[in-house]
Length: 309
Image (cartoon, rainbow, N blue to C red; front, top):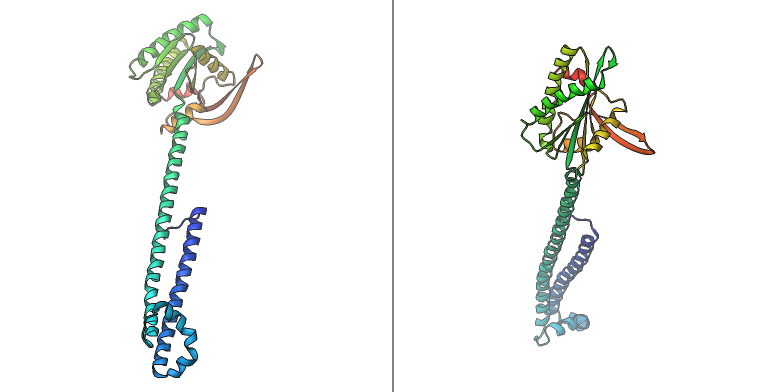
């Protein structure tokens, strides 16, 4: 017997139970009456005087079942008929059980199918939130200090141009769909999240090389900053750069970080190399507007991290 506790199944069980109880009463009654009529037939066959005083109680059923019976035979036949009547009633109980099981199975199949559809729909809705994250960007800026003072802007731009060009050249060897933009920052955009680790590895390798060369050649302190953002639609390059510097203004210079939307998609793809640590939400106020960034820190001190690469 299938177990189900929804309203429909409970009603089916209740109705079938009532039918089986009724059939059970009929079976018991038929069997008891069969015994009574068999005993009565035995008694009247040997002592006719019993018949004279009791026939009016027993004859109506006999006249109904066997009106043409001769003598006391009708009572014997009635007894046998009552015994035999319990057989179809018993099979009626079996049919009722089978019908109940069939109806409950149909209901169970319906509920399971409904549940599967709901689970599929739920899974599709769950997956949809990740499918909507279609693009990511990586923005790199580099500052330098000489004797704890900022390096001249023109010199900084010249050095960065060389560094960005070398990085861009190395990135061209990474076989995945991406776009690169060079200005006072280096921006990489892509819709291929599976190649993110390759791009980031290449980026860090080239930064480590540049750091070593620049610090040896110029005796400058190398201060890189990296931000990774994911979004549901393509963001203009200017906006990516704006977000990068807004995040830096929250004391995130010389750090590598990513926004929570990227981490959400990245983790969903079972990647963890550059997941980082959640550090909460930061707000930037500008021109009566507020931009908020929920961030993960990948490297708290990016410059030191490059020494280990």
